[in-house]
Image (tube, rainbow, N blue to C red; front, side):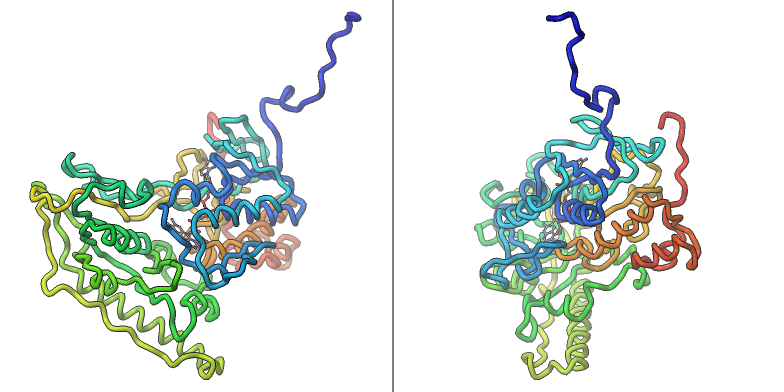
Length: 465
Ligand SMILES: Cc1cc2nc3c(=O)[nH]c(=O)nc-3n(C[C@H](O)[C@H](O)[C@H](O)COP(=O)(O)OP(=O)(O)OC[C@H]3O[C@@H](n4cnc5c(N)ncnc54)[C@H](O)[C@@H]3O)c2cc1C
């Protein structure tokens, strides 16, 4: 020892109780990774914070047999796409995880896994992001934490008899997990019909409670239905072209599944397999579940909408002069209905041992301490531009386009929002006139004028922030 003080290497964290970056991206699913790619391309310094691992939701929150319902050729992200030997196949969950890991490896920004964001608050110059692995100060935050964090279950679930096993699709992995005996699956979107099918095949008789649903064949006129959805431009429909965007954002996912051999899975398929279909679950009284009498109406509406969709595709194909390259138009049999669907189910009879809630999900924003949630707890945003300066969202249903929440859909949204973010960081006013500097910059971003006008009103820092 020569008496000098020990030399300490400079580390900002020794000086500041937080680290500094320009943008914090929350979540390392496809949305967070795609945003990271776009920020990288624009030279914007950022980090990705992920509470679990890359592709955490695909790895830990889906059931074992699940395959993507979108074909492999549609698995593409900015700068990356499926390049395997089976473009028409459907990835299993381990394959999706590998795919996203492959993408993450190509990105240069640091991805901090095992880092849970505990709070985001406005702070001078941007936001303070508190995590269980240290804090960050940043100018902007991209919320890519997923749309399916918390299962949505009707209130009556808490009044079910304790003898019944009640679980959500988030906790379901495979049929062996369920008691032998009958299973009530509530909800007939993509998840509900896939699990009703799997459980019925396992020898447990399934009753499926059906409300509003979207019917779709796997293939139409010799092409996968996703080809039609994409080629016809339907998936590119923008949020500001839709009359009732809130309703469009709440639409159930289509009754589709991915499998080794492409197959349609609709209520007729399930009927053939022996699944009993009933109306929407509406009540529970004295240990008796009550179903609405609306099964026929919901099925008729789904049949009608399917017919209209196919007609739209036919017209599009004709206008494009493609009729000769495609199989002739086809129409599918209407949904077969039980002669008199059950309106009640007495739980004392032991017919049902398990209730599986396939009733949807919602995002979890309990960590977000910025006044940008509506009274239902939904994020107030305009095409992903959240109502607070420098706050963005990505990956929400129909966020900027019909395809926004899908793997292939995040590319366009991430590109446009990162352009907007670049403009924000450069200090371009978000409500500037068309002729101004900022107006030009934002016009280049592809944001429609009304989006530009109301983007980013000022946030007021409150006591304690
Ligand atoms: C059952 C099911 C099947 C689907 N099938 C398809 C399909 O076939 N094709 C398709 O294109 N899309 C499909 N989707 C839709 C969509 O692609 C997925 O929901 C996808 O996971 C969404 O990606 P994301 O990046 O937006 O969100 P997520 O994958 O949910 O990623 C969000 C990430 O944020 C992390 N996170 C959350 N909160 C925090 C926090 N506080 N701090 C740090 N990290 C946090 C999570 O751990 C997660 O890794 C399906 C969805 C579901 C639910």
